[in-house]
Structure formats: structure tokens, C-alpha cells
Length: 459
Image 1: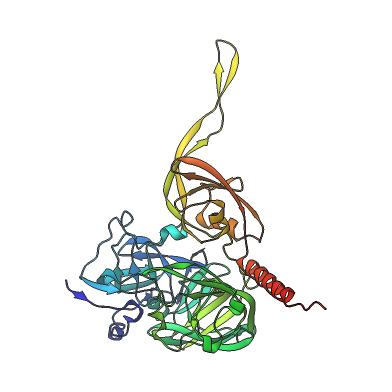
Image 2: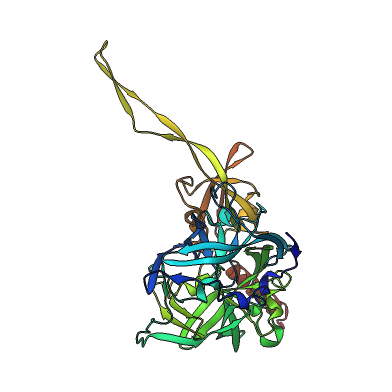
């Protein structure tokens, strides 16, 4: 076992010679259908590794499968031919130590690879499960897309992996087909945005591993900056190398040929968090899950093209968290629940007795792990580590994490009542959801009014 320095964003450049030996194949079929979960705009698919069933995030922005969160969920999972390396991904942290394993058996539906490399991260802090609220053991991307023509049906939540030699395209007058460029085995498309009243061509990574709509790299010369300085600083996500923060704003328009989306969410990540991603100088940012899910997509790496077709999500509004709270599913808590009443016949007194019965169960605990400064939640007095017990009278323990987060994405001015537990004490807090864009616009108009008023000449 030896150490080798490896930059995650570009580590596939020296591995091209292995592809003939490491390839997915379809067994006795020309296609296979794989149902997926769509969690926070991210695709979670079942993957079997060396006979063990796991769940992976489908991430078109990664080059090789990465496995983590396998402690207590990998009984019988064995690896051989290990060597230690360093990986680097998005985030404000440092490199991550991993183990490379060769000659692994991967199965996805009817697709099988008997000689798959995988990179194993043993650091328990690298774990996306708490932020998504469902088990995720790893991420996979390029190895699937390179071997198949992949149909991603966001509307019906399934993938179809097709044999490129037998796949036939259907005539589709409502589709848009674009050239797909692979750079370091990552897919890029050309699109355009309207920012600060100027139409700007952009080259974007198609990033199914990101949950936001659109990330743009700030560039004053192109006008790729928050319009009218309307933005707020927020937590954008968690990458392999740590947390990513940046500016959230609104964008006037995004276009793929004749498909146009207006008034969409955009984020401008902090430059330090995406320094490695910016080494490809032509890249302008990323088109991620909240945009991608509005289409059913055919990814065809072999022919260098991608096809988009609108689906039921196309006209859905672009929402964002207006509370300032970021939650994690942080372990479990004991919940006392009432069972159905039991009846007991007291024969000595000819009375029927009603007995109240309770049971104790372990339920998910949703903890505040990020709190935006000067947000409605922070001003109300909420703190990091608070456990959310109920939202607007609805207990959280029967809910999934994404269902709890839905409360915080409702309309401006929506009252929120939280019951929380802090150090064993039950407390109640109230606040209203707040659109920072509207708030900043109102402050700007007020400042303009005051300026004009002070400059009035009285005869």
C-alpha cells in the first residue's frame, strides 16, 4: 500500500487506458430500467457492490465511484487490492484521504461491471445522509454515462440504460438537442442567461449532483454578478471537501435554445470553495438539479449530444428557504406515542374499563446545523443544535426531512410556529418567512426616497 497524490476534479485524465477492461454491460437485454428516489432534486439509485445492496447519488460531475458512510451498513462488503490516495472536491476544506479498490463487481439493474474501481472514504464526517434524510452510501457518474445512452425521466422518476449500438432516437418536435462536450470526463453544454439586462453566453457543467438550480462564477466583465446588488449570503451545499457558501440571488432569464425560464434562482459560490472547478477557464458555472428536473433528458456521451424535453416540473415556481434554517437528520430521539385504547371487562363490578396504552419508539431527530445571520429564525432566538419537534402544530417525527423543509419554502409572510427541544427544555418560537429580495428592494427604494426628499429645493 502506498500514497499517491490525486486531485479529485481531474483524476480521470490518466485512466483512459483502463476503460476497455472496466465497462458496464447489459446481460441478455438491450436496456434496463432503474427506478430512483428524487430527494431535494437529487437522484438516488440502488447499486449493488460485491453482493451488497447500497444507495448511490447519481452525479454527472464525478469521474469514478466514491464510497462513504459504510460503517454499520456494509455487512459482508469486502474489498481487495487497496492503495491510499488523496481526493479533492468542492468545499472550503482540504484534501480527503481515500482507499482505491480495483476489480469490484457492480450491478445497476441488469447492467454489470465485473472490474470496477471504487474510492472508499473512511472518514465518518464525510456523510451526505444527514442532509438528505435518506441513506446514501456513495456517488457514481461517468462510469454509467460512458457505457450507455442514459434516459433520465425526472417526471416518472426512473433511469433507462440503453445499449448504444441498438438505441434508436424517436422523432420529437418538442425536444431540444444540444452538443455535449466532455472535459475531464464531465459533461458541458452551451446556454445563455440574461443578467443585468445583458444576454450572456455561458458554458455550464451538467451537474446532477447539485440540488440548486444554477451556479454562476462571478465575472464583472461579463455582468455575471447579482443584479442591482440583490443577494444574500447563504449556505449553498456540502461538497467532498467541506461546506460551500456564497450569494443567493435571482436571474432574469435562462435559455437552452428555444426553452426559456424566467425569474429563476441563481447562486454565486465563494471562489475559494470552487477554486478547482474553475481551473477549466471556459466554464461559467453549473446547471444543477432544480433546473435539470424540469426536463426529461437523454445523455449520449458517445455521440456528444444531449436531448431535453419539458416535463411536468417545467413551470413549477423556483423556491428557496425563507427561514434561514438548515436542518440535518441528526440521529434519533425517543418518542412516546399513544396506541389505540384497550378495553378491559371488570366482571366483579359489571363495568367496562378503558385503558390508555402508550408505546415508545425511536424516531428521527431534526437538528438545526446552519442558521443564516439576521434571518427570521435567528432573530426569533433559535440556535444551532435546537431539535425541531413540531412545525405549525404538526409533529415532525412522522415526517421525512424534505417534508419538514417544505414548511420553510412557503410564501413570504407565512407565520411559522416551532416547538423545539434545547438541552432537555421544550421551547416555542414564532416568526414569519421573509423574502430577502423583497426586503432589500424595499430598503433600496426607501433610501432612494430619502435621498430625493433631501434634495428637494423648497422655493
